[in-house]
Image (cartoon, rainbow, N blue to C red; front, side, top):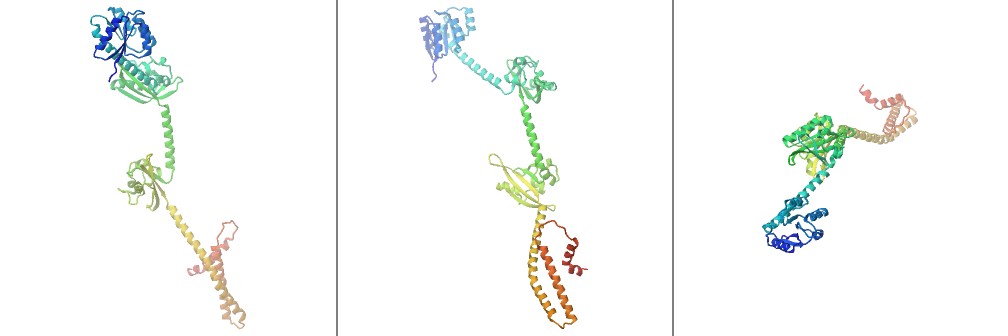
Length: 478
């Protein structure tokens, strides 16, 4: 239920006060009426509580209504006042309005019939004024506390009519030095025509902007700014401009650009191929090595399917690691042969902040030399095993050779009547035993672990020893 409107009636004639009170109670609007006889009492009441309206008689016993109005204004009481008077003096009415009265009414034959309506109108008017005042305060706060310079420009001369506090900082001038000055003069000479074009375009199209301008500071240095202009109706058309200092933005953009260049240089400096693909397997970014692998420029691979570029296929390979990563959300790898070269391909999932798979990084390494080295290592290990085997065989062969040499020695020593043929055969046995022993010693020397110590050697001796190992084979092949 709506509360009744509180009305304070200031009237020194008690009968008149009672009539006003009855008049208001009979009206369609519900009023809660209090009466007071003096101007001093009115001021005290207003200091104690809030009223919707004050009905103030012009002529009171202790003062005039104008004096009460003046005191209300001095005290700052925000209450609408309707002044009533027993005579229709126009001069009094004008003075009452000047002093802050919301309305003036004469106590004539229609006084009681129109009083409720006048009071209601004064209350409604006051509510609108309060709302307007609050709206103005709110927009003034926005205007003054804005992070950008906001200026209002006269559309014909481009003269500044109003500026906010931030304008002082951006234009490096006091507010009183800015108001009345041509807006174009605040910008660098080379940019003034551009600013004029923005303002004219705003007048013809309603709004316009330019994000590459510069204003001149008091020290002569230029400050990069963005300008947006819009036509607004403030009783007549004006141009509202927003000027933003983008020096920090430019600096940040420079830092980002330098960082991007460094990252790209590092990315391109990697000798292995790296690229990043979308969930649709389209290439998002690739380094130069990747582009060189497929004989294309880096920009030519962006946006194209990975399998089309690398494998010349319309669909991914069955064993494509990137496709497996998209399916399992885990790293995957594969070895691939291309043009006689062997590549190892790894794929790694990349997730966004929400944990959703955003893309896949693919790392490709040429392992052809690695594979060759692995084969060489295996062959070396086989040779080492043969060396160890030869060492064992050599030791095993020494025993029967010792037996043969012992038997030869025994026959040679204890046969007194041996003929020339037997002596020749025994001599052959001795030479072959010695030759076999030398071969065994050379095999042991070859299979023995070396420590790569520097020493003076006899090259002829090494060649002779080596040739002796394969002498029979060389002679057989002439």
